[in-house]
Image (cartoon, rainbow, N blue to C red; front, top):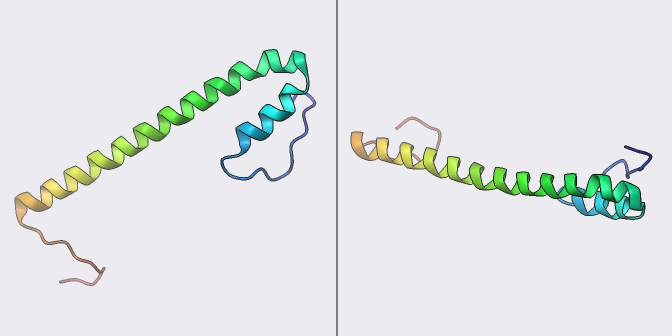
Length: 80
């Protein structure tokens, strides 16, 4: 990417830090790409919040349905 060479494997969750360090070494590249990294971080955090909200809503719907029809929770996959 624009002459920046990253390691073949970047640890999960460390992408922004690794890329930011590489980009800041080059002033022109930093001016062009740091705003994109900032926007990527905001989008990722927003995604994580929405993902958690969706999972909560889905669980609430499932639990409400079980409560309404009297279904009991099975701890195993075996039929009751």
